[in-house]
Length: 467
RNA sequence: GUCCCGUUCAUCUAGAGGCCUAGGAUCCCAGCCUUUCACGCUGGUUACAGGGGUUCGACUCCCCUACGGGACGCCA
Image 1 (cartoon, protein in one colour):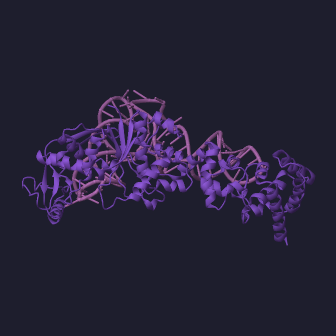
Image 2 (cartoon, rainbow, N blue to C red):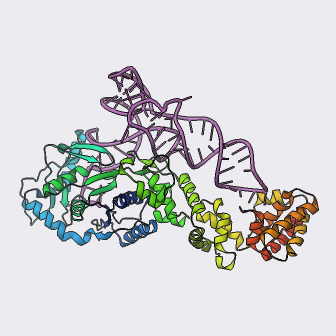
Image 3 (tube, chains in turn yellow, blue):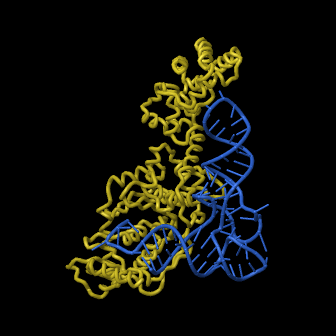
């Protein structure tokens, strides 16, 4: 049977990093085995599901490049199918109507807790033959005896006694089907071969297996991936900072960097840290996924992001950088070639937001000098050095790196000082103190006009400070 | 409370009984490189949760304890 996996989020919020990793693992498994990947929207909770959330999830999947082969399917479009299955179960006596009041259920629960027992429905309505005409829910008749055993592809052998389970509700009193029923019907109907999902579902699995059996369906394989924790060891949530995948785009991360970070969170292939998407596909194994939950670490994500900024095609980085420059009010079209700027600055930033910030000076005069850098550079004979080098730069026939370099070198020689005495003030004068590459390259990219203008400004600044 | 699952450096992880005086990566520290900042390079600090077994030998197997997480919804 050919492999088919799925990602089945409920649209009650944005796509968060935990869901994204589950989707990634599922997607990788399908790609690795030449199978198909399905996207299914589990929107049976009419109260909380929203179209905005569906859009946000779709947008996140697209940004990460997790393209699906089928779907998105919506469970709300399949109610007839679910109801048909429920009716079958009812006819066969494998499900029954229950009209227990919330009060009774609440009391039962409290009694069981008090008696140090696991709260579970007591089967009160199993043989009461509740009329279809009165308000009721439908419960699945879970087996009383025996146990459910399954081999989780990640967790291994798991066994749960049926006595631990109870008769779960499969249709609400408003007539809508519930999760545990719909997920089974869908995974069966869509011929899912490996159910890869978060391990918060591990306790649901035995119930679902009982449903498969009652319906006479083949049980798929399961793989429960551990969850992602925040830096305080609790389940990752908004209070830990960015959890929305799209937030990472806005914060200047490349999708492939996030993907690489996510794939290494809970999975490994020896000592390898950097994986292209093709490598992930070629090497991914569910068997190598860790059983323990892991903590999200932004420092490592940043390092990976920097690696990708440094090694990716500069034209692509430039393309992704543009909107971040736009956020700063900069239109790169009005200055040096953005690709050249990216090549010059790329190893100095760990996010595109940082890259934009340290590259702004190529496109516009900065507001003020970095205090520390200015203090260090604009002292002693800095003014004279700047004036001297300005003269040479102004007289250059062509504005080329080599010529610029010679101008600086000649100034250094003429003044009989160390290289830094000229280079430092010049660099700060032109960049304001922002991280920058070789001086000649920096000046070349900034251009003659802006360079000379900024040198004059620095000389003036030094004069004011000295006076 | 009951059940399920988990536990190697601060963090992500390697380790499938001897290869382990536990390896890699991030972070941190020191040094080198250097006209700034980085990148890069070199080195350093730091871990098998605890206790019992099994074994000639245990990070690896078993048990208990502790700690952590999850589930126990007419949520998914």
